[in-house]
Image (tube, rainbow, N blue to C red):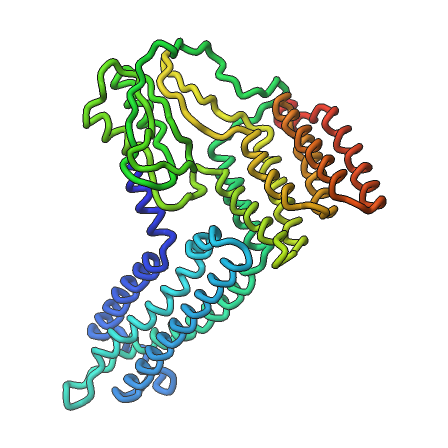
Length: 447
């Protein structure tokens, strides 16, 4: 199942799959229009000869012109896309290229032009002059003209889409929305007014005396996803415990331990194959089950913006703002326990993210590259204040206090201006006050 999902994800993010479907539909539509002409369904067009009537040579000329124009436009579009990909890679980070490639607008517009070209070729093949037994599919030619007009509209919309999507704000917003959607799917519950600690909630079974048998990875790559249901079924079927040695987003080396089973005897080939199949491993990371990768993309854009060669503080500030939105969405959520039980029996020991690890992923490297940049420091302190307003767990608030302390140390060490130091101290006072104040209840928790 994981391999099927991975294949479907690769198809959706490719430049050829959606356009190929549109081309096939265009070919079927052309055949249907030609068949309708053959059945005499275009007789109503004869009432408007100046608009729809034309001889074989005129129809051929128009279809040939449209087909040639469409292929010219396709070539121009591919050139534009390659320029945008190169610019995005150099200006931001190469990790966002997959977002551009999976853009549904780009794929559909490419498919529209390739489909119009295919439609015109098929219709052009059926047009015959008098010597060959005259046949001019007026209905099909008319729809070819309509499709050409639609192609012009699609081209204008595509140019607008490219100009909008290359802006830093659009890229960061798109990655953040995708990451927030993943957080909503993976961590759907809020913490409420309780302690909010990510504990297991059950007494752990004694694990020290167990004999762990390692199952090794079959290939090099990043773990994209894990089929948790299949992992639980495997543990139940073998009456064992599965312990993940690597979490989603980790890089695994071929023949290194991927997971371990608590078994007296080494696992058979069927068990090894079944366990390996629950992990989806590829040469790149995806956001599907890996919220940390969404955060990683935004952090990379911030680091690129703060580099001496670019020095774009505004883009880095936008990155901090959207990282704040992501962490604020995660802060009131209950992250599932790493120990998974079934009927009171421990079955799976998973490796997953924690609030503290994701917070470090979001802010540590940006803080390390914000030396002397008072705008970034102030924004990060504001981010901590915002996240603290929705964070109830003591361990999470301790992690936020650590971030505040490290930012204060950075400011004290790198800021020379007395005015900048005063601004930082004022903001620090507000943030410390927010960290001492319990967050308000959510509206749905007050009921």
